[in-house]
Length: 378
Image (cartoon, rainbow, N blue to C red; front, top):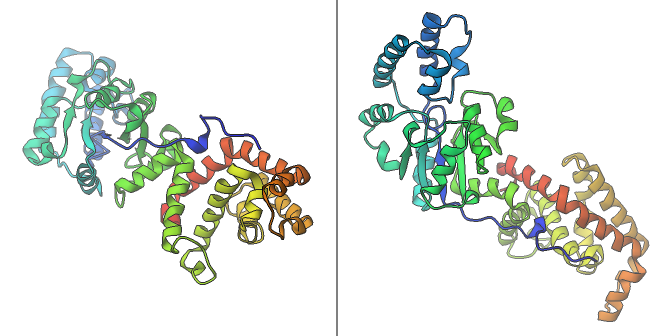
């Protein structure tokens, strides 16, 4: 059985989260509707030739809006005065769950920053209405702080650099297309909030989609990050919890403590542990074949996980196990154990096939499945 290389996906480990970077409007604050009212009215007054302008400009700075759509200086003066007054009387209310989530991150030692296309004057209006806002965040970066605005990644790169953090120690939370592009282009794990755009519209523009912050915790964020950056670590972390729940090892008396979905994931954990080290031969000799191969797991892989090739491989391993079960039914010394790899060539090849597939396909898919169904697997 070939050894894994040092860059194997199964060996990757997640760096702890150090920095969370938040967009403001539409991400932390439920204000996009109010801005749509203002800019919709201004578009009808000044630029009726650009239908839907209030949607086109989302996530861009005031300077960019002026340059692209309101070049007349008199227009700009009128719009600036109108916008300042509008923002002074706007309602700044947190998106559901946002306040609680930021507080938890702070309690966990995560640095939190606002990274917004809004200007300093806008932030003064926010803090006038919400005096505690500044104490929630370690930094507030506005349009005046960036050389280029979203979708340029400069704003989020600066957000990481001000805390001296590596990009893979950070996360971005965004809702607008331009902001999502900025986060992804920066190379930072980006959560997309479907607070304005639909989940379908942003699904391919971020690493993970969520409706809002309700129910989101620090631990869940780490698991979602693991699913992409260290998928085997996620599977190990979740199933370690299962083993702790059953007292360290499954028995006939404690199996009912886990759900069917949890049993399926634990089967895959055993495959990773055993097949990675010694192939299906080791999995069988260590007594896992009845649980992994004889149980419903191969069918679950096909019907529920949608991994037909992997299921086919499991059924073939089961077939070979049945054909040669006598070879595994007695105690053996090390020489006999090693001889099995020569004699049971088909099982050995199946183990190699799995290792090739799990590095590139199966393990990331399983981890993604967990991250999208945390309530099912936790």
